[in-house]
Length: 102
Length: 169
Image 1: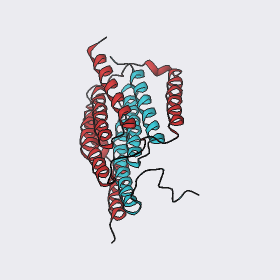
Image 2: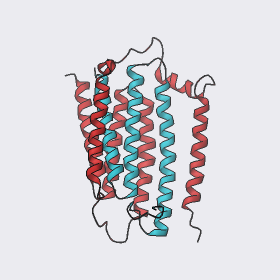
Image 3: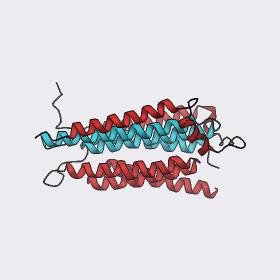
């Protein structure tokens, strides 16, 4: 039997790694990868709480399915934006995409 | 230590190691492949949590679609020369500090919660979680509205992605 705490600590560690990636990577596609890691850790949390606290209700799994759909939409739009940016600026380094920087 | 616990520790170590490689590897294609390994470990986690549908959806959607899409995007946005300069920006120390603080804070808050070491609750008699999930997603008394809204969101995102990435020249 695996205690709930193992899953929660695992997902907290995965979230922190993803956060580090989002804050520290230069390449914009790598930043998206960090966001994917964070979304996955949240999904693990949702499913773990469903399994350990309320297995009679299915809300936790439904929430995870919706997060899947939102993550897919987010990646599609994000990568399209980066391809468009690359076409105009010839770079996807987050340091150099500073058009909106005041 | 039971075999299931051993499996959990092995899979968790592999997943976290792969995730760490995702955020520090210089070569982006390698980072994407490490991401695939990390996502696969999370699919095993869903199996351990007795959520088989999510495990399959994880492999099909994340590994089969999102990771491959990322590899395509990496290949489409690569400079003519190889990647130059450091992979991390100048503020990576602050990012690492914030990550460690987040982890410590989360674990501290969770450990003060009485249900932290809970055992899995038993499934109610005569119900199949997979069947319940399938019915809940399309039942008017369940979650059919968010489910259909998710489809509309995906359609809008697809059209938006095509419009944004369209080469107008």
